[in-house]
Length: 82
Image 1 (tube, rainbow, N blue to C red):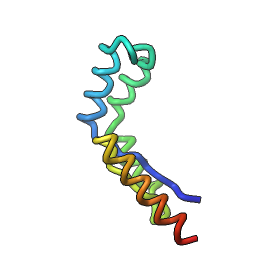
Image 2 (image 1 turned 90 degrees about the vertical axis):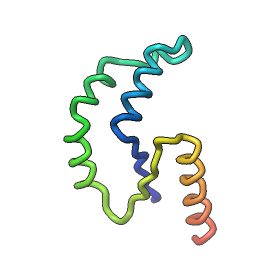
Image 3 (image 1 turned 60 degrees about the horizontal axis):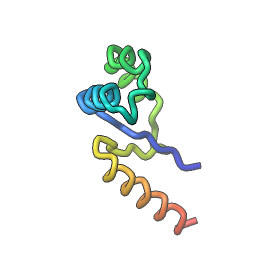
Image 4 (image 1 turned 180 degrees about the horizontal axis):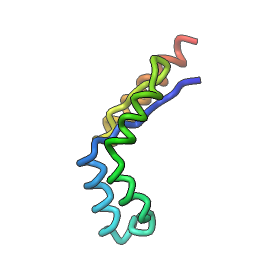
């Protein structure tokens, strides 16, 4: 099993939520839970740090394109070395 954590910082998450709410293409994805989750960002970060161990690959997902490329590189490397 290959485990990934897509990491997005609080400011980027807030910006994505605002863009989602204003976009005619993605507004339907927004829920109040998204907005409420931001108020627990620090607590969720602490819990995440408890859960993540050496088996996880943490991907910086602030830039989605770079994040996807990083994920694909890791997958490619791991699959080549089975």
